[in-house]
Structures are given as structure tokens and as C-alpha cells.
Image (cartoon, rainbow, N blue to C red):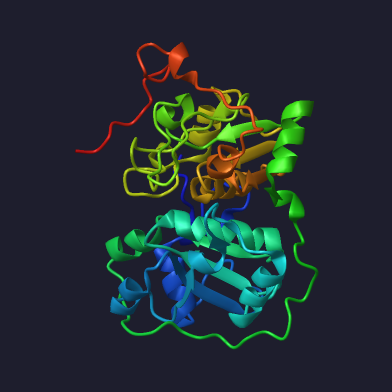
Length: 322
């Protein structure tokens, strides 16, 4: 059966309103009649990392711009303090009751911000399926120039964070490991998971968190790839495919799941897709392998020695691109 009903929304997602198509975004921008419109005010943002120049060259008409550098900071790339996050959202006109539509040239950047908006308490966060590339494939127009500046809000409108359970720190992960009452899900490539590579130029340590299950990611050597979760055109795979992939690894909706990767971007997309599928007891470990590996008190496992062939059990690892 076709998984895409009229207006582009998908039957296979519980939160079907939150994954939108280029046609829906175009209708929103044009003021046309669309299905499942925002209940009140809305904001459209492109999200990137140092991508202001690319944005100025051409973006979705009417879009503002959010940079991930405003939401996280090195050297661990954890989120900014809650007070700073609240000031940032207010400055861009984002309240808890404003619909926020996000897209990105790198979909992971948009997912990173989407997760933090949900953590903060924005009730209606929507993501353009396939990102900027999907807009371009649809042949829709671009607009050059600076980003739209939405009027600042007077306040966020509710206590921030409204969903603190959506994000966990290193101390919480240690507690989870000690109690064994949640699943740690490593959203990393196979070779990152088993410890043959760290995956990052700025992370020296190889290995992973003991007890974590492999939730998959994308192409080896590309920390911006989530190919295991996407169709060839970059859109989200059917929910049943993702559930089956996770189920084969022992990852289930009925048990609390904490997603992590190197620094949070890939984990945020896995979180968002799980959230779309109505996995309620989910979170992102913000620090990920970058933070965990820097603390010598933390246990580390290198699984590479257990897999002589250096390949995943089902041959699912992606090759490093030429």
C-alpha cells in the first residue's frame, strides 16, 4: 500500500504532521490552503553550521536562519546552558506555542535543533523530509539574500526545559549502565561501534560504551550520513523498515532508549524518527562518544577484537566512498 496519502503526509507515522514535504512547505509560505496547517503563528528556518554564505546564495523563500554553533559549543559540542537556549529562542521569535518548521542542507543540523526545540518545550516542531535537497528536486524557487528576522518574543511562555527527559548527561548514562533499566543505542557506523575508528578527526579515542546496542548510522567515513535510515533520495525510510532494523539489534519501543553518536547530530535524527513513530521513552545523550571517551573513569569497550573479519554480522556496513 502507498505510504503517502494526499497532501504528502505518511500513514506509517504516528506523528505524521511533523514530517512535511516540499509541496506542504511551499503552500505554507504562499499562504495556500494546506492540510494540517499550524494552529497559530509559525516560523520557517534553515539550519546549518557556518552555512550563512550558502544560505544567502539561495534559500527557501521567507526562511530565517539558525546556526548550530548558537545551540552547542566546543570542545564537547554539548548544548548551551538552558538560560542561553531560552534567550536564543526568544530572540528568534520562538515560543513554546509557535510552530517551527526546520530544514537543512545537512539534515542532521536540522535534526539537532529539532531535538533541542522539543527538549525546550516547543509543542509543534516539523522537519522537511529530505531537507534542502528535496526542495531542489521538486523544482521549487529559491530566494537569495539575508535571512528573515522574525520579531523577538516577549518570553518563551512556559518553563524551559518542558521535556528534560529528552536529554541525558554523562552522570545519567553512568546510572543507566549501573541499573541496566534502559537501552543505550549507538548511532554510529559499524567501524566506530567496534572500535576500528573514532569516526572524527577531533576525537582520538576508539571504542564505544559497554553494553550499547548498534542502532546503525550510514556510510563509513562520513559522520554526516544516515543512509541506514534513508531512501536513496534522502527521505526517511518506511517506519516498519526502521523498526525491523532496530528490532534485529534488540532495540524495542517498549524499553527506554538513549541514543548517542559522536557529538549528538546523528543521535538527534534517530531520536526524531523514533519520536515520529511514537517511541515515548527516548532521549539523546548529549555528550556522546566525544565526552564519554575523554573521562578516564568511564569504562570503554573495543569490540574489534571480537570480529576478526571486521564486518557487521549481516554485512550491513556501508563502504567508504571513493
